[in-house]
Amino acid sequence: MNIFIGSLPFRTKESELRSFFENYGEVSRASIITDRETGRSRGFGFVEMPDDDSATKAIEGLNGTEIEGRAIVVKEAMERTERRNDFRR
Image 1 (cartoon, one colour):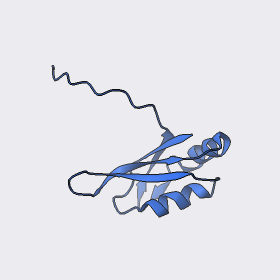
Image 2 (cartoon, helix red, strand yellow):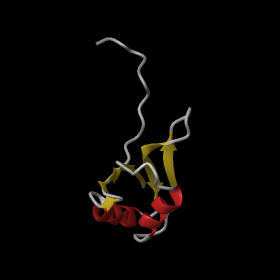
Image 3 (tube, helix red, strand yellow):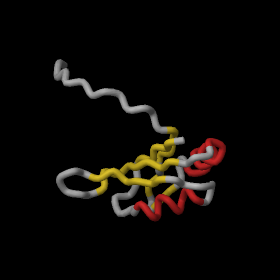
């Protein structure tokens, strides 16, 4: 299962993100999304866990917990949809 993590402190490292989730089971991938131009964290990331039961427990256990004083958002990632180039208001 692919898991979205939002409201991450900008100093959080991928290794730290991985360790939070490894308390719930195997983590196959952990990534923090960075700005293309600056390389700085955008404050969110994704964790992939191969076992759905472990992933569900991680979501339930970590959603709303605080990291460096920030309550993080943890939920199942939604499939990415195509971006629209429609700039109408």
